[in-house]
Picture 1 (cartoon, rainbow, N blue to C red):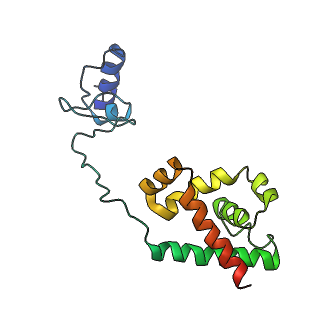
Picture 2 (cartoon, rainbow, N blue to C red; picture 1 turned 90 degrees about the vertical axis):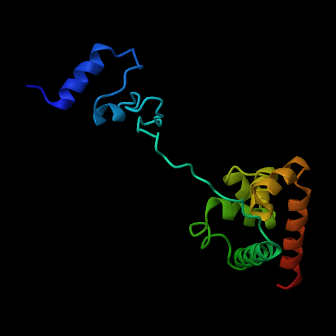
Picture 3 (cartoon, helix red, strand yellow; picture 1 turned 90 degrees about the horizontal axis):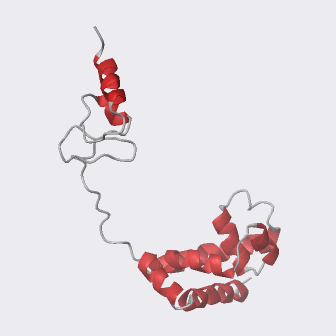
Length: 162
């Protein structure tokens, strides 16, 4: 007497090329064979997705002026910390993206080069933080004019009150 799994393996190995046969056990679902439901869908891992609920992300969040002000305050504080004490204490605490943005604000070309970043990569990535996904894409298409203007306000705030 063979187990259900063994029988399924035999059926699967008898016709390995044909994929129009529905699996007769859960073991087939894990091998990437078609789902047991007629017209069913399978994920890349072979899991039956026919009853999966569609994910709705809702309306994309649009950053507000208050969000941009908070980003400016945070970035100015980080830039001042680096100006006051150097990079040593901060590079291990901050993500590579945060380090790149601070280096861009401080015009630190050496740090940007170490991170393999440049003005374009920093600005295009930060545009979405400032204006949301759609707004960031639109600013990218315009040449990142609004993002550059925002960074000018950061540099002005950084220089005004040391």
